[in-house]
Length: 267
Image (cartoon, rainbow, N blue to C red):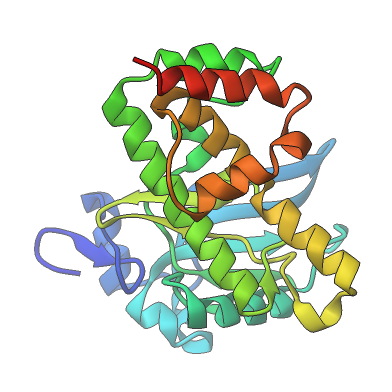
């Protein structure tokens, strides 16, 4: 942490830590200090999982050496009564993904917890104007988008498409490709994939299962691509071509979207 409170949270990202927390970096408490609860999953009053931004305590820094570099990090904790995936598997999957993408390697795991670098940004679903029902209403939403906004979303989405296809080419599927698992980081401006808990390797699946997994990884991204083409008109590139090729499976009435895209290219 420098004198102005900037602290590394991943190999590529820094955040400015509020002054009231800065002393916990230099003189950590015995146990982790929770800065912010990002998610809490419960059944009734029984907690199942919590996702938190924490400052590593002395116990954590001894157990996970990477927290000396990234004391402010993401911690996911499962409670004993919950049914959950294996944190060790999630750790291994993200470690593999970090070999192919710019996603940072994970920090550590225990039987009931998973730790990783914190990625400062917003989930793609929170910056996208689309996703309303019925789906045809997204055509009007697209027409109302300023050119700069639609163009920016297209380039971010295209980058995400490239990352997912890179994973597929490496024999790896994400397994939970919801738009909230795409984090748009503003500095540097980029998209990062998160949450590899349900990722699968090619050799774990049959041919049919692998095809289904890859299709599922791309479905929501290709739907967004179609919405954006309704704002921008037809585009070149692999994502645009894939969106057109899968139009029949993406929408109940694909020709309405084709007509909207065609109109954007008319004088």
